[in-house]
Image (cartoon, rainbow, N blue to C red; front, top):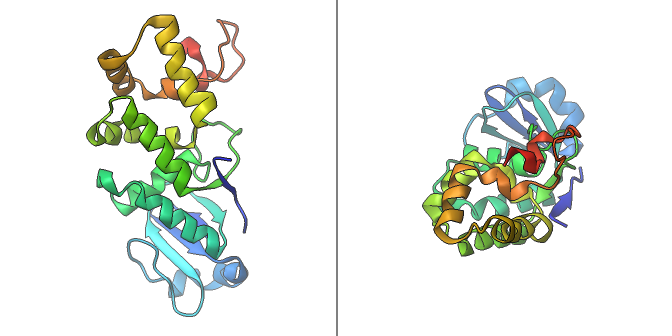
Length: 206
């Protein structure tokens, strides 16, 4: 598994804010969230009710997380600390990678999951093994945050092997390719010109 499937607080992605509300307070929060929310960065608990808010540029969306899943999410964010992203950027990267935020890359096929720290770390370590520095990875994650949600063996490793076997791309050439077009890491279909409506993940774009 790439991460745990979504269990049950609620994140409300608005044009300017992202609200976290626990499942037990969801109904109540629908009436009072506009009046008692404390604005700030990061995961900010609001008095006795279990609500959190952080700034976001995402579209209006709502996600339900348990307290345990929220802690798992926060732990996964720590894996991104080396890249000096803002708290908001870290959440947007994880949100797009694991289906919490809409991404055209996934379409409707991505099941919403809570990212697991172990999976995020393994993916980052593998990308580093390809010769990508942390500065390189910062660029890759900004261009293609969904890479963290791709399957490590079936997609990332398989595609790297394919690039070397079919096109002889490795070493410095591979690094240049990944910086230019990191989405190649997630390609998993090849329509061979006969479109199957999975263009964002198709080798025909290579």
